Length: 452
Image 1 (tube, helix red, strand yellow):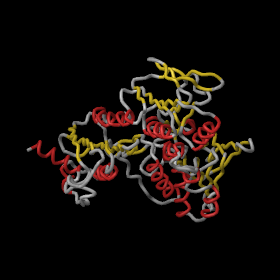
Image 2 (cartoon, one colour):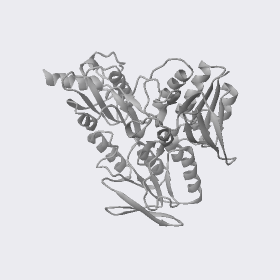
Image 3 (cartoon, rainbow, N blue to C red):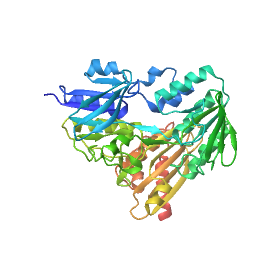
Image 4 (cartoon, rainbow, N blue to C red):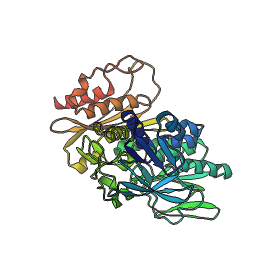
């Protein structure tokens, strides 16, 4: 008999797994349950969809349910919400939302790819008209539909993380007066303070107001809509509010089924993406991610990782052997005309782990000194182990050239290189693209001179 594979969640991890299973097992039955009406779309592109940079919803959708069925014989069932995992019976209990009925579906192998959900505290007024999150395609469509019927002018974004900053820019592009509130003493707390200050200056230079150390206590308004965000320090007028304070793994059903959880209640998986229960795998934003620098499970939900984990889970579910090599915590974000990126550990993470480290910080042009360049120079910060000089992490901010350097750094971190190894790298050079010594190598030289 053909093996039945059941996948819960039809986005990056789930559909990557389904595609890989089909390559490994041409005869297997693959069923994907997705509680929403769209699959396989780019969540990271939603702020650009809202801002009008991406003009059409369909541009964010990689493949439709029909595509997967016709091309790969994968049975994708939209508007099917899984209510329970029953490992003892190897079954899932599913609610068919359109038919308003429940069904029981058996499986041979199960993948949990339930993703993450936006964190929304129990603030009074969180359900007022004009208050949104921006996590799913449905969120974006609701926001855009609301904007077609209303004419707000003052937007408050609660949360200064990646999506919050991208959303602030998107709303500014649409002509809103935008205010960003954050509970922390700096924006993007996963970055070092000097990089966060560059981001804050960029926002202010473009007319976005930033208020830090602001603890939201509620939202005011009436049936017509939200009017203000209230914090312990004051009140901020708003007729549109975006809550963007982070995400959490959707792991409640897994916990109820006896599946072990890890950091931040993400589903704990091994290098093959297996859970503690036989024939149950997990991948993507609902699962843990092994961090190569920390040498421990972590939770860093990103689309790149979800696709990799889904593919690896699919191979293993179909009887093959593949292992997830882990992450080093690489991320990049555009904030108006500036780009910030990071890989490895921040100063705070080094401190929390008790790692003895040193930091080198420099400013450098990303191209030759004599070649015309009107953009801001790069700010680089590299952290390395004080004893063995292994690279621990780094962050870069600037205009052009940030993406190139962060990927070089991520590669160096992945392979356990030292700060001194950077100088030996054979990197591309021509005056319009680099100097004879890349900025990363210049930082390494500063360290070596300090050692001499």
